[in-house]
Length: 327
Image 1: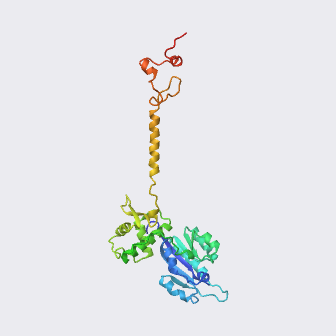
Image 2: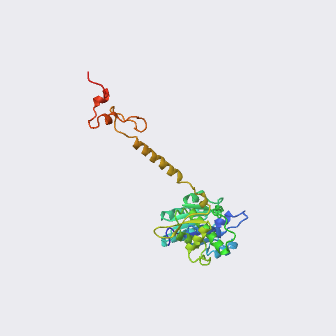
Image 3: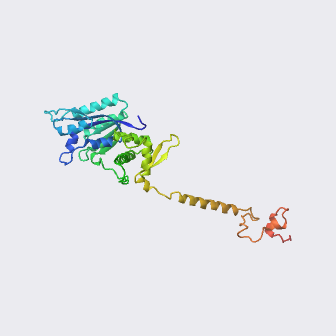
C-alpha cells in the first residue's frame, strides 16, 4: 500500500437516495460518486441496500460499477424495510474483521446512521458521509469526519490552461487525466506531489492507464513532456532522485516573480548602516562624551595627538585647556 493511501468501504442506502431524487429531472449517477471517492483512496468494498423490485432501472448501472446489490424486501406490515439494520451489521463486521480498511463511506442522509458513525469512529475509523442537500440530516452530517454533498460532485475549479489543439489525441487524454489527478490530490491537501503518488491516483481514476499506450517509455517522460507544454513544473528530489510536481495549471502564472528583490534591498541598507556606524565610532573625549567623526565635523586633529603624543593625557588639562596655568 502506498504511503498515505486509504482503503475505503462504501455502503449505499439506496432507498434514501431515491427518495431524495423524487421530483428531480436528473437521475442518480453512481459514476460521479465513485470518481470522487477514488480520490480518497482505494475502494475495496461496495455494497448497496434496497428493495430492487421498486428501483429496477438502477440495477444495471450499479452492477456495471461492480457494486454488490443486497436485496432487502420491503416489510408490508410496518411499511419499513430492514436495510438500515443490515447495512449497520455489515459495516461493523468489516470494521472488526478487516483491519486494513480504515475509511468507511456512508452514502445516505438518514439520521438513523449516526450511532453507526459514532461506533466506527470509536474504533479508529475515518467516516465520510455523502448525501443530498435537501434530504440530509444535520445530525448525521455533523457527526461524520467529512461530508460530501451529491450536488457538489463534478464542480471543480478550472486549474489548467487549454491544451494545444495540435496535440495527438493520445497525449491529450494523458494530460487531461494528469491534470485531473493533480487537482484531486490538491483537494485532499497533499503538500508534496510525488510522481509515484500522482501515478497511483491516475490509475485509481482510470485503472487501464498505461504511459506506454500514450507514447512514453516511463512516467517521468510523460511529466517532462507536460512540463514542455507549460502544464506542470517539476523539481528533482535530492534523496530519491524522483520528480516532484511543484505547481501545475493556473498555479504557474499566479506565483509572484519579484519576491526576493525587497529582501536584497533591505540587506544592502542594513550593511550600509553598519559600515557608517563603525567608521564614526571613536574613543571617549575628555568630557566623557563620544567625539564626532574626524572626517565629517572636525577640521583639526585632536590636540593630545599633536602636542604630546608620548605623554598621557591629563583630565585637568582637558578642563582648563592646554595653554592655561595654575593660579
